Length: 86
Image (cartoon, rainbow, N blue to C red; front, side, top):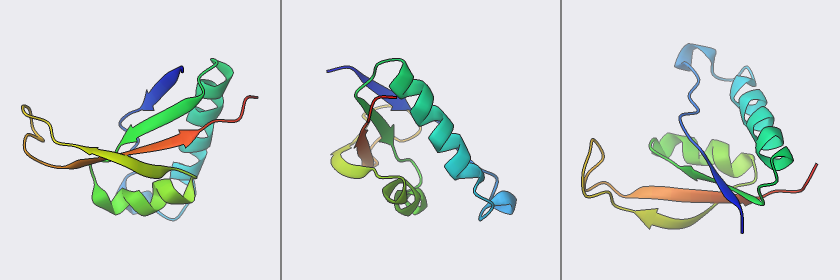
């Protein structure tokens, strides 16, 4: 199965509640879907974003714990969404 990862989707807190994140997510989803991917994956670094991704149709399917780097030893939820083709 062809899978793509969405990375580094951040909206400045001063701009929250303006649908900017939704517009960015929707655009990324369309691009990923048109490229033929069947799923998109997000590693959620900020647990406060889990609700946003759930609202976008994603669900947690796994947690990873990196062994190195800035997030070493931290549990990172992985979320996925099965895509409809454009």
